[in-house]
Length: 316
Ligand code: AN0
Ligand code: CP
Image (cartoon, rainbow, N blue to C red; front, side, top):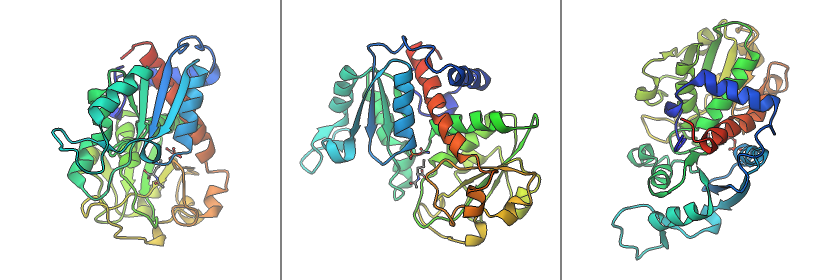
């Protein structure tokens, strides 16, 4: 595996889930494969889970980890080819990526979208520029359009909790006071399209995700109807995609609450975290036995470790 920046790069999902399961059962079994290898983690945005779980995954493989908050601690980077650098940007990605590649055997990057320029965001310039100029493998820790490690943790969690062969999984939009990216829902949709599940997306009219991503998935604008017989409810806010980056609804009738969960088949509640209580989901659901957000977050370690293992083994 050269770079891992998209769910599209997963060639054999069952094999990947099996590897993660084996790692979870025996996390230190491959402590030697990362010996004398360095993982560089570069953050342009905040993180709790991704940073700590990926660092732990690297340590479980014997890797050394160096982490930098590039937005606050590094030189401001220029990403445009041919730029005349007479402004605030002190260093070009071409040099930065090659230099970092000399210190690191794998580079992992978190970089959110602007949510103001749709075309630029869809280019996922930060992650793709690192992938282009780095001379070592690059992993996305959530880019402008995808959060693939999250989606792997999500499918591992669904596999652990499913009680029937083909569970019904519902991705529901839920209200949030801030404009949020599309990366988590995009990767989740792509993952559900790969997995053996009965998948439905529900969101208010006009809150369609990128149609290229959702084109093979069912969309139901009636949240209550979508929830019927669901085995998993995966809640997530995203800002408007058509009216790019705007908040067109904060309708709290979309908050996941016990009345809505009662429509399901005793569904498990999932969210990538961080989650806003009593916006996305009510306390009563998040604090109930149906919530599996904590074990879901735990699986971030095994998702990251599975991908690092494949990269260190040079596997596809
Ligand atoms: C981010 C998002 O929605 O993409 C990160 C989630 C993992 N969430 C927030 O900014 C609250
Ligand atoms: N789910 C997730 O990626 O969380 P962090 O933003 O805290 O890393």
